[in-house]
Image (cartoon, rainbow, N blue to C red; front, side, top):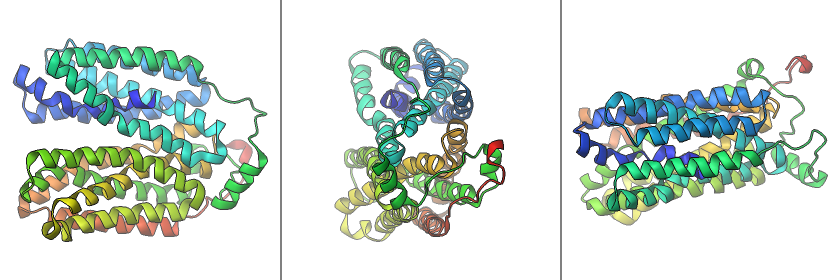
Length: 395
C-alpha cells in the first residue's frame, strides 16, 4: 500500500508527454505537483484526525477511493483546471488521507520496533517513483500517458482499497514481549507514559526542536534535489549520467529510510538525528568541494549521502511522534508533522534556482544547505523528552 501511495512522486514522468500533447509550459505542469503536495499535507492532517476516531480500514477505504477516482479522472484530462483538480486535489488529498493509517497501525503492533517498521513503510513510499514510475514510463512509451494513469488507478483500486479491509489496530490488551519493550526503552530512554494531543504537543520544546530539524533538512535537501541534474551537466557530466545520478538519489532516498529507521531502534533519538544531519552535511560538502576535482564517482557518492539523509528524516518523524507523544493521537499528530514539507517544497527548489540566477553558480545554494544541516545537528544534540502533562487524563 505504501508503494502505491508513493506514486505521488512519480509525477515527473508525465510532464513532457502532457506538455507535448497540450502545449502547456513547465510552470503550468509544475503547478499540478505543487497543488498535489499541498493537498497531500491537508489529506494527512484530516486523515489523521479521522483515523484517531475511526477504524484504519474506514480511513484507507475513503482515501483510496478518492485516489482511484483522481487517477482515472486525470487519464481523461484535456485542460489545466481538470488536471489540477484530478491530480492536484483528488490524488494529493486521497494519498495523504490514506497514508496516515498504515503507519498508525504499524506503530501500535510494533511499539518495540518503531524505527524499523516506519522505515520499511516509508521506504516503499520513497521507492515508488523509481519502481512503479519506471513501469509507467514503459507504458507511456508503448501506449500513452492515459493508460499509465489508468494503471495507477487500477493499482489503487486493487491494492489500497482491497488491502484496507485487512487493517486493524491490536486489541487494547495487546502487549508485545516484555523483553523487547524493555530493550527498546533502555536504548532510547523514551518510554511513553502519556499521550499528548496537538495542544499539549505544541507546548513542548521537543516538538518545535524536531520541527526545526525536519524543516532545515528537507529544505536543504530539496534545494539540491531540484537542481542536481543541471548542476551535474554544468560540471561537464553527460545528460544520461546526470539522470542516472538522479535515479541513484531515488534509490538512496528509499534505502535511507529503512537504514535510519533501523538505527533509531539501536541508537536512540539523539544519536540518530545527529547522524542523519551529519550524513547530509558530508554529502553537501563533498558535492561542493570534491566533485569539481574528482568527478562523477564523487558526484554519485554525494548524491547517495544526500538521498539517504533526506529519506532518513521521514522515519525519524513517525518514530518521534510515536515515542515522544504516544499513539492515542498519533494520526492527527503525524499529519501535523508533515507541515514542514509544504514550506520546504516551496522554499527549497525555488530558492536554489534564485541563488543560481543571482550568482550563476550553485556554490551559495550548496553551502547554505550545508549550514541548514549544521542546524539539524544542533537540534539533534539539544532535543529532550517532553515535559509531563500535568493532567494526563485530559490529553
